Image (cartoon, rainbow, N blue to C red; front, side):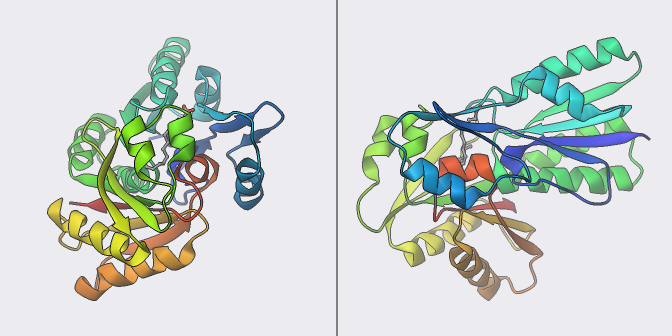
Amino acid sequence: MNIKIVADSSANLLAFDGIPYASVPLKIVTAEREFVDDAGLNTGDMLTYIEGYSGKSGTACPGVGEWVEAFGDAEYVFTVAITSNLSGSHNSAVQAKAVYEEEHPGRKVCCLDSLSTGPEMVLIVEKLKELLDSGLSFEETEVRIREYMQKTHLMFMLESVENLAKNGRVSPLIAKAVGFLNIRIVGKASDVGTLQQLHKCRGEKKALETILAEMEGHGFTGGKVRINHAHNPAAAQALLELVRSKYPNIEATINPMTGLCCFYAERGSVMIGFEG
Ligand code: X90
C-alpha cells in the first residue's frame, strides 16, 4: 500500500520515522510578522517576540491547497488534525480530501478530527502506523483508529491563557481565573474538543499531582504516555517521574512543543496525551 500519514503542526511532530509522513504547518501571525510552524522556526525567539508585542496576534490554519500538496502522490492518506471545535484545520483537510479524490480516482483519504491536539495526536499517528504495519486494510485501519481515539485523552497545565482568551478559544470565565501569581490551570480536552478547566492549582508541584489524579480518573492504568512542554523540560520530567513513581514500566517520551502549541499553551506549559 502506498500510504501516507499527514498531521497538522499542532501535533508537535515535525518528522516521524518508519512510514511516509508529513506535517502541515499552521502559522502564528502579527501585523508585522508571520511565523510558520515548521522545522525552521525557533520557538524561543517567537515566544519572546510575542511576549513583548503589544499588537494583535493570532494564528492561521492550513488551507486546502497545503493539505493537498502534503498528500504528495499517496494512494491512501490519513489526516490527523487539531480539534475542529477550535480550528478550521480539519475542515480544510476534509475539503482537500474531496479535491484529491476527485482529481485522482481510486485514491482515498480518511480525515480524523482529533478533538484534541499535541501529544494526543501523536498517540493517534503512532497507532495508525502500528495498525498499518500489522497489515490491516485502509478500511479496517479506519475502524480501529476511531475505536482507539475513544480511549485516548489529553490533560494540560497552563500558566497563562492570555493568547487563548485574546483569540476567543477559551471562555472569558476561565481567562479571569489565571494571571495570579503561581496559579496553574489544569484542564483537559473535553469530549467535544474544547478546552475544559478542571482545577486551579497553587504551584507546579500541586498541578502535576492533580494531572496524575485526573489521568487515573480518566482510566489511566499505566498505558502509553506522550508529554510535550513549552520551554519547561523540568516540569515535563517531573510529571514523568511522578507517573513512573506509581507506574514504573510505562512507555513514555518527552518532546518540546512547536510553534502553534507554544503560542497558545504559552511558556511553562505541559501537555500529556495518554491511553485510558
Ligand atoms: O486555526 C487556528 O488558527 C488554530 C487555532 C487553535 C486554537 C487552540 C490551540 C490549543 C493549543 C492549548 C492547551 C490544550 C487545549 C486543548 C483543547 C482541545 C494548546
